[in-house]
Amino acid sequence: MINTSKFNYIPMVLGQLGYLISESFRGLKQHRTVVLPSLVTIFLCSILLAGSLTAFGGVVKLLSAEKALYTVEAFLPKVVPPDSIKAISDNLLHTKRIESVEYVSADSALADFRRHFSGEMLDLVEGNPLPPFFRIKMKKEAYSPTDLVELRMEIFRKGYFEEVQAPIEWAERVAKWKFKMVFWPLCLSVLLLATLSLIICNSVRLSLFSRQLLVENMKYTGGSPFFIEFPFVLEGLILGFVGSGLAVTLMAILVNAVGEAIPIVADNRGGLGLVLAGVVLLVTLLSAYFSYRTVRRFLTVKNFEQE
Image (cartoon, rainbow, N blue to C red; front, side, top):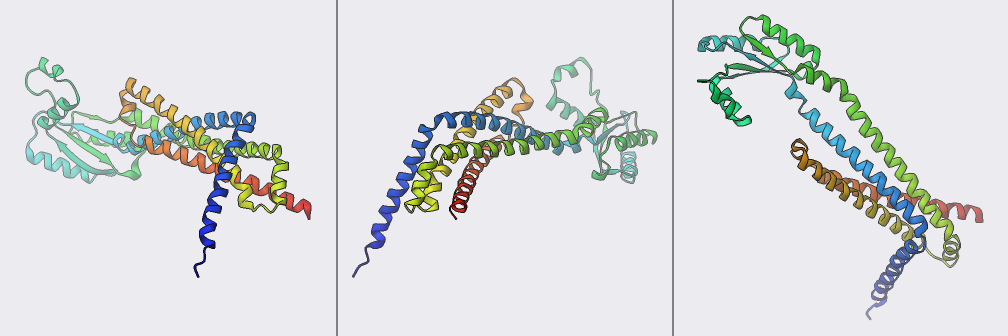
């Protein structure tokens, strides 16, 4: 004999699920005076969260390129014998704080200049005005403006070079602002996440109070915790998804508009999509979790009062 109970169970579960989903949307419509302010606040907090995380991503990219600041370029005279180049290179490699030494010939320097700048500036002079030079990279443990200044002076005192250059001012600026550039975006992100949690909890709590009689009747008639919690959790999930979705859409439009006006922004938009998608996922999960937690706490308190 075939057991048909399991076949009857599936439509019953689907019917209950459909009812719970419709109840969630009905609750959003009936309590829109509570829902709309929460949605607007989630939207605004999500914009700030997306902005702070986007800024943090830019800082991470900036700091990943920090090693380029700790590079010294030492310019040689126009004519240098090949054996002297090898001797100078070996001497530099034995210098403290130096990780690697790269010799760039005059022809290579000219080709590199033409790749990055207009050749019209070179048309005014005859021949190749650029001298050969050594590109010297520092060791990671020596990344500090003080060590960069000392290395520049030490290389210049060797007497091989006509001029020694290093981006000391930029290194000092990055070193001065590094902590603030990392700390404040992270601090703001944590603060916004805490704010979002409070907003969602308060929104669900107000919705619960307005439907307290309905929740208690559902509980007294034998409704399971899942049956009672599901509409509220779905409401929180919808609020989080819609609010954060609108926020990241606006943020993407703003970043693209700024990128069209400022090329450096356009060149560093890689990974922005993942950051914005992460904001939507994070806010949505946060909304669902705190909705569940608020309803569960409400039911726990009611059970305790009855006992």
